[in-house]
Every structure is written in C-alpha cells, then in structure tokens.
Length: 103
Image (cartoon, rainbow, N blue to C red; front, side):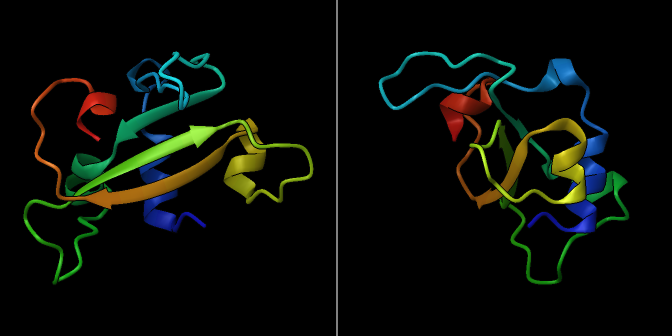
C-alpha cells in the first residue's frame, strides 16, 4: 500500500511525465495500461521533505502503475483512477533520461 506521502507525490505528477514501460518480451506496453515515474525529488523536497533519517543520499524512489486484473482490491487512490501503484527504492545511478532504461 502507498503511504500518504507517496499518494501526495503521485497526485502532483502530470500525466505527460509518466514514462512508458515494456513487457517481458521487450515490447512497449500501452501508455494507458502501465507507466513509471521517479518520485525522489517530490518526496525529498515538496511533500513535506519526507526523508527518513537513514535515507541514503543516493536512494531513488520510483512509482510503477498499471491497470489491475479483475477482482483486485484497490485503495481509495487506486479506485479513483483505476490503476494499481507500487513504489520501489533503488540506488541505481541515473545514466540516461529514460527512467525505464535506468531502472
């Protein structure tokens, strides 16, 4: 489940910022079906500075969203737009502008 800070950050992401994702065969998925975006800057700076004391300086937070399968239980945020959200943390160094290539 995505916490309050995560939900607030997700709500601030414009639709055009979400990056495309690929399926396991390397084919691009429909952008309306699935997407990914980095939330690190929003979480560190503009959503109350939600930085735990032990959060390493190189930690990055990504959000992945997709349309859930039938029967999935969704939280209020997910029910509002019909997508499931997952946050992932990594220390992968950004070497490209494309989140999907870096993650």
